[in-house]
Length: 211
Length: 211
DNA sequence: TGTACATCAGTGAACGCGCGTTCACTGATGTAC
DNA sequence: TGTACATCAGTGAACGCGCGTTCACTGATGTAC
Image (cartoon, rainbow over the protein chains, first blue to last red):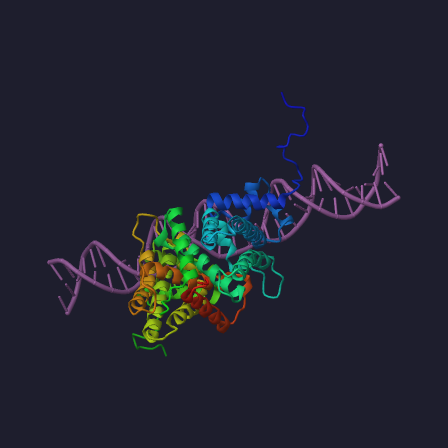
């Protein structure tokens, strides 16, 4: 009964081939299913079906792995934002939709999202930091769209960087408040989206009364 | 030579008298000096000069201690915000100042600030959560001021809760971005304040162009 | 095409560590009479 | 005011645990000739 077919794709090989990515995928799975606390080197290796020492051939230490996870998450977020921008470039409520996209990403990848904003995963000052590049990438996606909307007159003219920072602050702030604060424990996604659309609208229109 | 004065205030007593607060103070000190990672039950007790088992007479477990720390921090933040509101109630840039106050608090108490926004320190759903009460308190300080400014016509009329949420989102978002993101690593307080004042101004005035 | 050899990428055992928590205890305090 | 006793708030030892990291190793792969 034992099969003579030699190359069953499932058969474990001594050399994995792409263990680095497999470890990151395992980390993502664990983050999703067991939360941030489950992300120990040993647990991630176990999840990937590999001895924990193997991880050291692909990451210098635990922080290096977590940093890589955060970088991947920033890239995934950037892709989501890019997609939303492409699909809604001409919508009058494009910024609201971007806010909702950001929120949805955070709620759907809550544990990963937390790793994206952790100063202790940054490289020491002066050292090139791939996490910085990744976070700048996501930010740049927003800046590009802000620039478009400034050019076409939908947004006020001004430094697109500064305007992007305000926008990012608003959606990031509300997202983390919803994600971490007891007040919003158990909120429905739909209600959360409603909140973030409202907040973005207030940023667009301003909350001050100009008489 | 041994003193016969019986009540030297420094002499350690078997019964501490106020160990609960002493532990929280020790936790604050550690958070300040060694960062969030130093906040283990054992380290906190050591810092307070007491056996680690003693802590269990005052907190049910480690999370209970950290929750109490977060609650204290929310109360401290509320006090800072109240003070800023009192001192600047009539300033034209009162909201900018509130933003700067929030930012300064976070930068001056970075490790504690991180514990204030951690879903895993919340009580399970359905259980009364003192952390929720504390966070609502700080938020209420903002809401009250928003309400004042809506009544006097400085802010547009509207639901003060919603407007407060937008304001809180903006200042909380930028604060955590500055605190956690590699891009702003090592930024000077003064520059950070400049950023947050700018972001608040954009929220007040709006970023959309109304033709 | 075959072989020797360097290199790569795994394994499993071991190290030392500090953690949260529990337990039986003891010293100090407060209270009833 | 003194005494017996319950209660409170500490102590220190112990438990078991899983962690990050290192090490000598071995199996698999790639390359030079």
